[in-house]
Image (tube, rainbow, N blue to C red):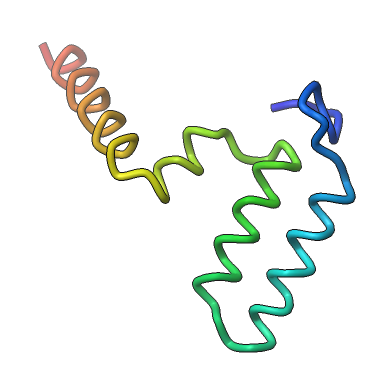
Length: 79
């Protein structure tokens, strides 16, 4: 992951802060699932999570592709 907050895609501290603020508001309204989503997005924008990790939470097809890939790697390693 990048050491710099921001990187080449225009991501920055202000977006991370905004996402974290929204997550805090969600917690105040006891919407823990939504708060967790915003915190994950903040971690992605801040360079702490890879896009593939975020996709695995929310994209069923991406999760299935990842699982198939891991099964193939496991089968190759077991052979």
